Amino acid sequence: MDEDVFKALADPTRRRILDGLVERDGQTLFEICSRLLTGPGPALSRQAVSQHLAVLESAGLVHARRQGRYKYHDLDTAPLERVMTRWIGPETTESTP
Amino acid sequence: MRINLTSVFVDDQLKALAFYTDVLGFRQKNKVAVGEDWWLTVVSPEDPEGTELLLEPDGHPAVKPYKAALVEDGIPAAAFAVDDVAAEFERLRGLGVYFTQEPLQMDDVTVAVLDDTCGNLIQIMHTA
Image 1 (cartoon, rainbow over the protein chains, first blue to last red):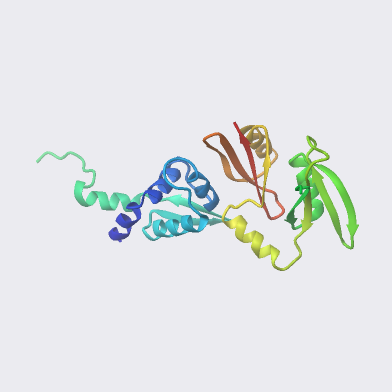
Image 2 (cartoon, one colour; image 1 turned 180 degrees about the horizontal axis):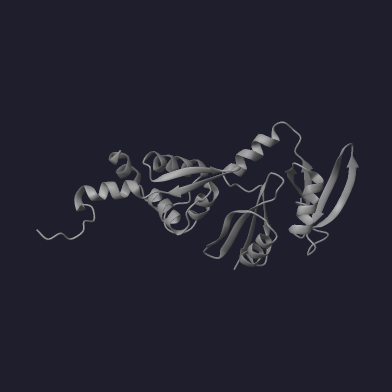
């Protein structure tokens, strides 16, 4: 599971998709593609973006949600917290020994 | 060669006429009975002799699943130019129009995507 998260984050385009979802959660595939047309990095075909999204979804970083006739994509940072606390430890309250 | 006619497939032509005129602000140009359907076009009031948009019946069996797949992914069937996407977004939202994509500015282009209530998404855009 952690392996999937590291693999997903290794790609700059996938990191840009997450950046976009931080700006506005709940995006259609079309909006995700539109946002990748500007800024750094290459503009990608819709098929390439779909493949990147599939990697993010399998890592649990993005969830697709059907709402009526539309499909929206939401960011989920829980897997990031899990992989980070592996080294830096969870937030703990100060306790006096 | 010129582009003088383009079309969107709609699930109900008269409902579509109402939406494209009363809500979006286009003007009816041609309405000719074709059996139980119509040859039905609208134009922009800013360019009444310009490109016509044909509101075409979507009865062909291949069309509905095609439209549904595009809508699911948020992909517009057509794109129209407006003066100010943010102002148009507020105006249309006030009329109850649903947007799958709220205004998004990318460099000098601003876009938004709305549901035409007839089975399509429409992108509106302006360039700064």
